[in-house]
Length: 191
Image (cartoon, rainbow, N blue to C red):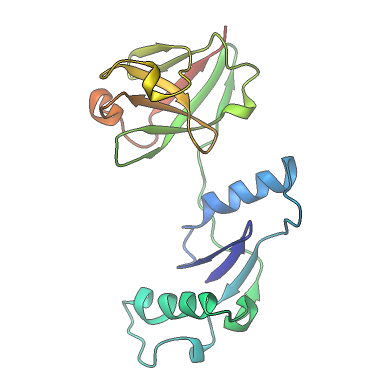
């Protein structure tokens, strides 16, 4: 499939891979729409003239997706690459759960540095002051404005560049220090 989501183009399998982008686009259309923002467009890549001549059964990344992306980059309109459809495959994403004293969230991404991104958008927190983060038997008091506010080796929580609560170790790997994995519970305790 190919898609236009939030003003960007994507090409790849219709297997749920684009679910996070669809979730973010849907949330921004409802909360803070950008000027000119439009609903996502999905195209089934069913026009062989935009593929390589010989398509294998196992390497669509090379034979279909890469040529389709190249055509998009060269200015071919998205809609020319195939037939539009409305309902791409979506996978269930974990969502923060409201608790009496805060939120129960989940590790959704572990980056190459071992930073743990949660599914908790900071924008949903009533206040960023006086909160505590619990993960893997450890507790972090408050949010840091940046990694540099603490000493190397310190376990910190902060708001990442995408606006989500993140757990990190300054100059280290929170994933390694905590033995964390995707789906682990992270509690955000409000004062």
